[in-house]
Image (cartoon, rainbow, N blue to C red):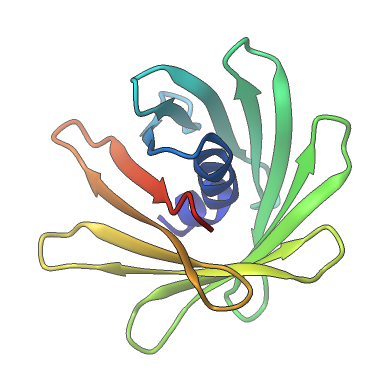
Length: 170
């Protein structure tokens, strides 16, 4: 689950912010153990897809595709000595566009700090699990203002489904 949070959070929220609307995603694991995610807008149209696989040293590598099937970016996620999940994201030409570091706090919330390509803070998110096993996430910008929310849950078939909404006035 931490991998899903870390690897997809940047793309999910950036897409929802750019589109100025609700973005949904469905994540499933295929026969080969790859994690496949489809991102859709509020009209149900696919806007992006991603595939995540784990390499032999334990890094999670993700490739993101646009709705035409072309590669729009990649990311690499790994766990450090302290148990933090660190992710670096790249554009289609291989340039770094951002990074994140996620960890679980004392209250079992999963908190992620996001950074831009210069290493400056780009915001934070905090995820918690409610009574119904939904994963609720709040996104804030570098000033601490709330910029969006998302809710995720597993369906009957084991797929992980999220709905992310940005504040269009931020």
